[in-house]
Image 1 (tube, rainbow, N blue to C red):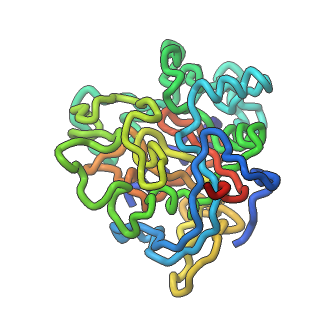
Image 2 (image 1 turned 180 degrees about the horizontal axis):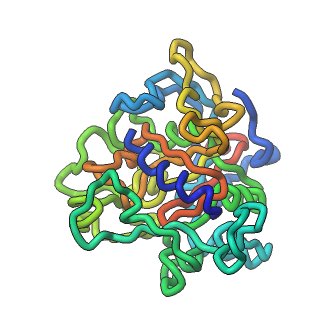
Length: 338
């Protein structure tokens, strides 16, 4: 991740509180075979947007064709197979160039990524730099820094992958990233206008339904869901479409550029929206940004409602974070009738 993106990535975390182009990849030939590890999302119409009245996510109707979606986030094991097959090097593993960081000495231009560091005492939640640090050597193999490993975590979602890294994986897998509309429709699992992907009750039966932060963020995590960082991709129950982890665990990259005004006036039903033609944001007019969805293990009701299905986040396409991953989509025919 480049230094110019670090501030953007940190600031974008706060945004979670708060037609353009068809996909060029991820279209399969005609087949009646169900793609391994994917779930068919039937065509339909739903109300897209935030139940919290977020200014960048107003409620509006959307109609979508059917598509396939990975039933889980891409795992460490799956990403490792991609790296072995292609010798791919992620953004976080690459040294920034002098052109990318003009005036910065070579010894200071080191590979790395953003990592959450829990403060030792009470902090002002507006001072987010107190718990986000750029850590040299942090990457997908070492998500929290050089001393961390993904050994024994094959079934956890891969993190510290940028949007560009996710695109590279999708191309290798002959898939694509989901559009933002596809992602939210799939996350809701047939439950229209519900606050959570499982309904309107946050903790039904007293049992947490997703890997998020319980307690006083960012200083005390009560671990009510059992996880301090990432959880296995199937740790919690699937939604109505059979998809796991559509709330919490890790943020998921979408294909779309981010714009605060991307949804328009909401007066007409959008059909298969693919997002705006650019990612210009008033806060950072010189930087293109992409959409992230679903929240993460760092989302909390006292700070970030990103784990609710209608909430958006943004970041630059070269940004890598310790709580950001992805899943793939595929344009292909519906499964054969049985």
